[in-house]
Length: 73
Image (spheres, rainbow, N blue to C red):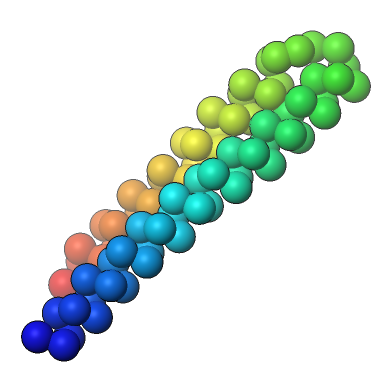
């Protein structure tokens, strides 16, 4: 019973950490893309491109981690 609760809590914390990683990386990449666009006067090309890249990379890493956890169990 206790081990099951710990496992569930661990999964909830892992999902929360991934949510935070997606939000933080999205803002960082948006800011970097906006800065590049301002320097090159290409708005919103880099901003949107880097934002999509950030989301894709986070989801890809989350998928890889989920596959790894499925293989362990």
